[in-house]
Image (cartoon, rainbow, N blue to C red; front, side, top):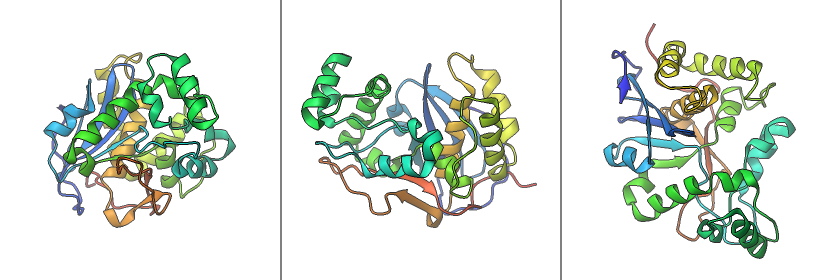
Length: 263
């Protein structure tokens, strides 16, 4: 883990490390906030590597669908997320695949299975992340530890929540969108600029993009929040056939008690 000097952190009920994970071209980018407030970051080839080194008191929040449907009914968390994000950002929430589609090796197979199971085809965007969905699903089904500490987030819902439950004005890939999201994170953690700069210089932009970094940071800041401020979409999640919750976690309080350096 790459990290910088220790900072004194504000106490929170989470005694372990808060990880935020986002998929990137190089693998899985993680940003971690230790209980002391010390940040860490890196790229791993498999989330299982982080789960193996994590303690039971840690939290790992990852931007990937967890809990998959078996039939035509779409996940409530996906529907609610799109509604809250509005027309500009709704497309960032890719439809979660039907569970049977995980077995597909080609887009043609995945599309066919999806149509047979749901009456709808699978989008190219969902198929592109199918290996990552399969990886996390397999891990959660075999590991009780992973089920205890790994939860799903969506970065745009994290930013929506940090913005006072308001859709952002600009798309994430635009310059204005970057500044908008950066400012929200800076409002939660004073050292975001320093953290971002160190991560940015550590990876090539085609391996880890700027928005990958911001997304991982948003997930970690959400994970480090006082648990009383954490809510889910939907409020009462349902479980899939393997007992995995179909939910997205976010911060309910506009000014959450998150870890940041003392000033």
